[in-house]
Length: 334
Image 1 (tube, rainbow, N blue to C red):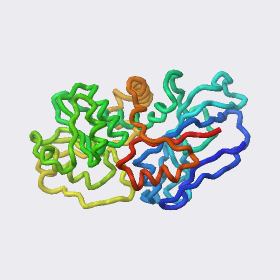
Image 2 (cartoon, rainbow, N blue to C red; image 1 turned 60 degrees about the vertical axis):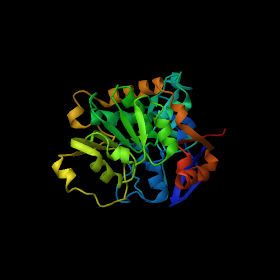
Image 3 (cartoon, one colour; image 1 turned 45 degrees about the vertical axis):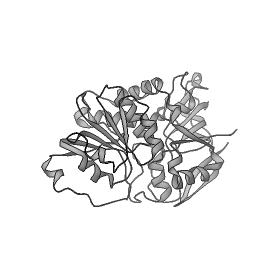
Image 4 (cartoon, rainbow, N blue to C red; image 1 turned 120 degrees about the vertical axis):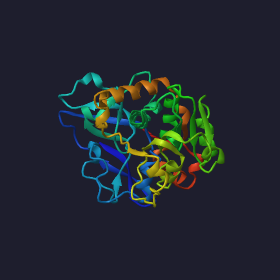
């Protein structure tokens, strides 16, 4: 059968290609995609040509095996669909089951059974598209180890920043400061009772307390690191969840950074940091992400829905008018 798949052709250009899937091996599964989510952070690096071409996209994701940032390439990692067919050695009872997979945007795909995750029957397909982002947010909190007495800030209120904000509010912190240049993103974050929104250059933010104990840098802008350093208190921790691709800026590591004994910690969801491996496993982290998805009404973060055939419009929106969008998803026609 034929499948339609989104390809990144060159900076600023995508197209939908049709290709033959071929027959199923005995341990293969055919999934029909219902919806998929666009990652406005990582995918926009691919869209804009800001991914290092000598670096594998993500060696931990089977669907990206052998791919780097060179064009043309398929990309995406938030597909939700249903099992449509199974190979001869796969249990037929899973047909019709709702699944999440780290797969590029495509109408159908073939994979092994260990390359997708069964979603609860009661979870909506749209909510399921947030699983990768939710697991990423949980990973940030694991690495951040926020304590109740601490002053915490989030720099960047895209989808992952919003999820981190909700998770932090569940921990009964005194206050969470949510920082973003876009008013509607700050207003989203301020729906949580412990959160106050600020502009990045807000005098109130810069003069707040004696500096923040914990800062999550999730803006995707490496210049935000200098703001994080400026905002940190003594022995503060800066969790860098952003992937900057090939974007670089001068970082001020003199003065406050050195004397305040700041800690800059890279947090990436492909692995569990060794210092947390005694308490956390990937399975436990995934289960926490799934339970968090069931507790939250994450669909509220979806601002736009496009059929896959209108992919160009979706990426132009995120590239040129990001102030109007939060989570953008693709729908799939029969």
